[in-house]
Length: 452
Image (cartoon, rainbow, N blue to C red; front, side):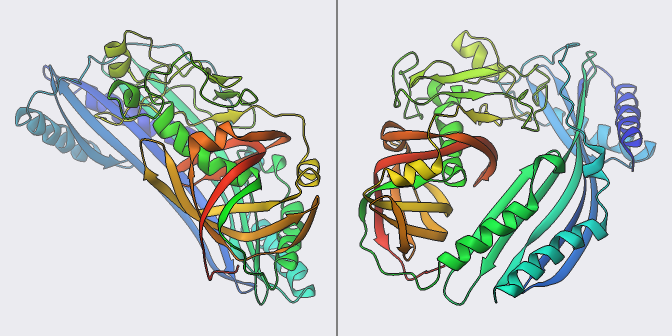
């Protein structure tokens, strides 16, 4: 289905829903994706799939009650009518919800053009060619590879019976690669809305280089180390801070470790963080799931917590303006910044390593999660390359370690911030545009037998 058909179908179904109302307000939301993925392992392609999915929800509201029903983008008039009737019945049998607000009327949105025709039209042959380059390079080094090459288009839409109509579409390219030797692995990843902003050949070279250096890792004691965190490693920490630290509802309910600290210095003064859907490197959307125009929000300035992100209900309770970061309704979670940018520093990754007498270089983490919410302590393991640094040189690979580390401590113990940013995905999170960091007193709580 082409771009025009997706938008026309969304408009057709919305208009049909609005024609069937009888004393109700209605909201129709669209989440469409059209993706093509090539997956490979052991230097062999084993999966090539194309998937289209057009999911819509119809939410009816009357007073403090609402009801939601899901249909698909290809529904006929009869299916739409049945869905409206079902939503009406749900409303009739629902209890009042004090968090339900009147639906917004017409809004004005700034344009964010994130549709790349070249990315949307990547052929199976081109994806195979990227994999062929991976396999050829790995076989020369007696290494095995696994990963994905994926291109996709997506669309989000929101319309309601009060005249609001919001629509955005964009593209995405993702290349993720793990390279495996006999006793260790290497990893690299690129994601962007435009394939022209990625460099798969560079990723291949990086993953192979890490894998070659990561053979026969040595045992190492757990404890506190000075660490060089790559952008991928930093992204996990900023993702949890975004969810629990910058979410205004978490502050309202006293669940955030930063509750009551707005306007105070909470991090190292080298740290500045913004949420910016309009950054050209991010696949930002100009509206949130309530239809509020999305704003660029400065969250941290030189270590000072300057702002939070808020949905409409939280903003009303806190007597502030909503920032355009609300989630699909009904929602008791709050608002989340999804376009986080950590401002760069002045130090190269190479110079960070040179400055370390005794420490570790972390490629990235996995299985990260919150172990203690009050301090936003994160636990997880290193993966695909953990290296000892001695006297300013990467000395040798070491076996992976489990870490248990306070996010607050991490961002207060920054020695340097990298001058080059990279768009990376984060666990439980869309990702962030972030540089590397040099951090002291990073706590590794135990050793593992996992060497790769």
